[in-house]
Length: 219
Length: 247
Image 1 (cartoon, rainbow over the protein chains, first blue to last red):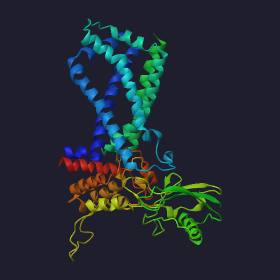
Image 2 (tube, rainbow over the protein chains, first blue to last red):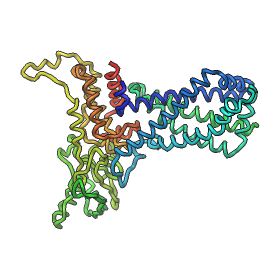
Image 3 (cartoon, each protein chain N blue to C red):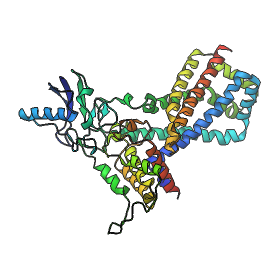
Image 4 (cartoon, rainbow over the protein chains, first blue to last red):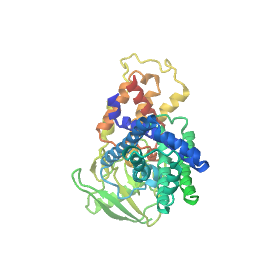
């Protein structure tokens, strides 16, 4: 089986499996974040649970970080190999005639998402790790909602989040069906998967954008 | 019609090559694209200049030899055709037309617009066949029952002419539509089952060895394929390789 993952198709499958994992994580993340729109207490409760549960902290969180790093590194390696396979570039190439912009620019949207993840880590993850494991400050289960609202006061940060989520939408717009195609499970259900993919790629980023704007205008 | 042609000229595989401008007058809209190039070549011969080397054979959309990237698209602006089926009525008087060879590291340019597509032959030789006894004991064609759907889908895959437009148009120079079609054509039929696992493993290994890129599912190959080979064939090849490695 190790030989399989060294083949071009094996690498596609590995990209697709990590994409499925990350797409599932996005549903979980946006669901918890949406709680902040409806109830500060419920959001605090959910965040406190996620922030203190050992299974989430010491198993799921490292697996998630590994998943993100794996997806990005493999995507970058495949991009370099594909560039090498191209040889000389065409003097005139009308890519728009046969494929979508988002399908041709997954590496670009991927880089923007990666930059956003770094910003997101600086904003939320590093302070959280510092709070819990470096300075070991006393845990206040009601602090999460206030911290969230504080972060979204800055219009610059909200703007950066909106741009990143638009690019995430474009990345998912191609990535969702592409992952199913790589797994070889599109035949006969291509249109259904494309429709679900479009809905997923619009709803998830739109919900994140809504949350950021909601807290910006309601703090 | 009067046209300006920007054509890739390259003396040999080791030459750097460049785009050269040519003016052509009195082009009839009824001419095929290759006939227009024939007229240009006759002019060049009359002027004691080297004619443009380009591949062509059947001139009826079957052989897949006429490999040209025209105005940024494999086989030019129209859908589901080869260059020999492209007519000058698809262009306007005064147009500038870019004519380039297929671009892919696995398809090196031999001369001008001719590229070496022998990588496809080697992939085919790696497993694109079935082993049958042909020494006078050939089975009756109706001896093995095949569903109409399977026969039709296998025939659709078998219409691939191996022209290389899928590689030429792919931003990754991936050959997966070609290999997917060749794997599918046998995977769908009972006769192809015996060697199915070895076939897909060997053909994919040869494809990787030839230096083709990896498919990122843009779908450009399906759009530009003159025979309309479906992306479903790539999905089937992926399934076949997973199945071969799981067993």
